[in-house]
Structure formats: structure tokens, C-alpha cells
Image (cartoon, rainbow, N blue to C red):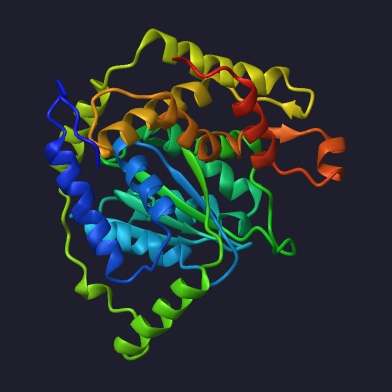
Length: 323
């Protein structure tokens, strides 16, 4: 890692990031980019959507993340018959007090794993709109604030279509990142087999230690807010987002929320790389996970076999990089 004379002291953040990565490495083989993005999401106070075929450790990754932070964790398995009250909670009549009392649902936690988020219908998916954006829930006219930090880690399978409900654009836009986990390499798969054989066939999450506290996360987020951004990089980010709206390959471009998230994610990555200022490379690295779920290609481009990533890469090549 390069050394920089920084105005901000980012050494504590770097130390914590390395500790979190070490905990992941106890069980997860490879997936370095995905792990970097998940850590960046915590630092940038964002939610994450993890997409991958069955068996690539999407759920396991979220569980390990929760184990590395000394905080509350809950898991919600989304199913076609799941109701909004099963997620948010409901008011129950108390015969002793002759009054209704609110019983909190599993969403009331710090890190919430929503497994197979696209298996629940739109009615249940929409229950997440308020809590993901405003970190609060309003039920029966009363507002309940979520305890910080609050992070939703959702998973979905990109292949299976039967029995699933596509996430609407408004829901997707609330996720900071869409992380795509691919198959491991041959070498990584050999390491997976060797590790599982050594652990006698199961992943014991009890070997993981919490290495981050809520107070640390809050202090790290304050540091990230102070990361320096050159004026030309504000322009660079804005030009990238504007190009998604002008491109003839894209039916629906990215919103201003995308530019805000791109700047926040680049700040988090800069600190993770030991700097107190962002560079064009930080912005480039974050462009794909920030934008791939926020744009809709034209039908013609989809028929030609282009993916969102293909079009975003074209845009990144077209937009002039500041020097």
C-alpha cells in the first residue's frame, strides 16, 4: 500500500478494515472485491444487494459480516406468503392493560439479512421503502427510529424467475451497491474444499470474533465525511451520471442519489486505501456497483446481448478523466 502524507488520521480505519478482512478469510475464500465493497458500505452507511447463483456464499458472507461487528443481527427469509407485518411488526391487544401494544418485527436490528428478497411480493417489498431510506418505521401513526448503525444486506438469485417478484426501480435505488458474486476460480475452489475438509464439513461461525464496535463505526463515518474532494472530481462524478441520462443505449438513467452515493463510496474507498482524498480511480472502481442496478437499457441493447456493466464501462471510457 502506498504511503501518503494525510491530513486525516486514517490509521485506525485501516487497522479495523484489516481485522475485518482477516475474519472473513477464516471461512471465505477469495471474493476480495465483494468484501471490500461490503466494508465500504458499512463505512458509507449504505445498504447492499448481493446477487449470485445458489451456492456462492451470499448468505454466509452476510452472516460473517454481522459476526465481525459487536451489534445485533437478524435474518428474514422472504417467501411468497410473507406479509409486511411479518417484517415490520404489528400492534397486539394486551388484555391486561386493555390497550394495543406494538411488537417489533425482525427489521428492528442493526444488520438485517434479507434472504431471497425477490421471493416476496411487491406489498412486502414496499414495506422496506421507508426504513431503508429514512431509518425509521411509521405504524399506526407512530414513528419508530432504527438503532444506528442500520444496514440491510439483501440477496437474490439472478437465474431463477419462477416464484420471484422483480424489485422495482425505487427499491433498487435505495441500495448503495449491487454486488455480483461469480463462481470461484479452480484454485479458489480447491482451497474451499481443503478448508471445509479441515473443518470437518461445516462452517463454524463461532471461530469469528467481533472486531468492530458501534462507536468505532460512528467515528469512522465522521472521518469519511471529512475526506477531501477536488472540485474537478465533483465535475467528473456529475459528468458520469449525466452521461447515463444522455446515452442512446440507456432507457432510464441514474438519479442524483447515484451521484451522492458515488461520492460517498469513493470517500470510503479512499480511506480504506490509506488516503484522505479521493482520486479518479476511486470513482472508477465504485461506478459499476453503484450504477449497474440504477440504469435500464433500451430494448435494442438488451436484444443485442449487452449488460448494464457493458454500457457503464463504455460510458467510463467516454467521460474525460480529470488530471
